[in-house]
Image (tube, rainbow, N blue to C red; front, side):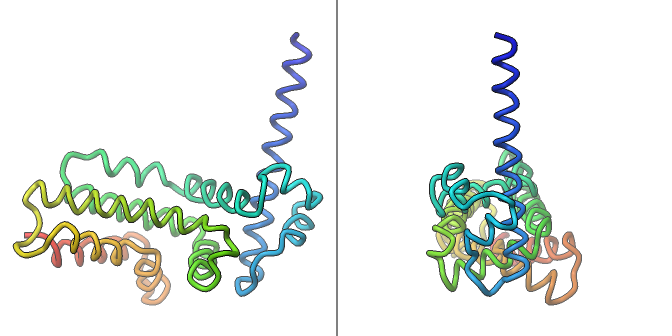
Amino acid sequence: MATRKYEQRLRAEGAQQTRQRIFEALADRLRAAPNEPPSLDKVAEIAGVARSTIYTTFGSRAGLFEAFTTDLWERNGLADVTAAVEVPDARAHLRGGLRAACRMLAGDLEVYRVLFSMTRLDPASLGGAVESKERHRSGGMAYLAQRLADQGALRPGISPEHAADLLWMLCSFEAFDLLHSGRGMSVDEAAQALADTAERALCT
């Protein structure tokens, strides 16, 4: 029994190492050829596995990208973004969430930039993986906007729906990247600027 459990543990560890090699190979390919839809043959070559291993491990191209983006988001700090939702004060939720999100995006800026660009230009190439993350973010913005409204923090005349639209824009990857990469702000400076803008535009 002990031998069987040991062998099972080794197989599980080997499978996890294979997943990580494939993730690293995909990230390397996105950085090296940001204007090309990533070829699974090339990813398999970089990872040192057979193309069939990708399908065995992830089920499909879409499955690979869903697993890859989930790992990327979680590894770079998604838990901190989620934790910001738990604070009682909606304005603190806004500021803490923006700061955590900017730090997460800065964790692998090149890869995020390629993923978001490809989602705009050729969403099918990523199997809808980033779009699913963006739908989740949209729900988060609606929730934050409603919290601000419920706590009486929204300016007169601004509905939760309109607030959610503005938060969607200000909390986007593109907004962060324009300030961080385009204007040379630090990660925290960019987060502060976006939070200040959101509060001035939306809050009393």
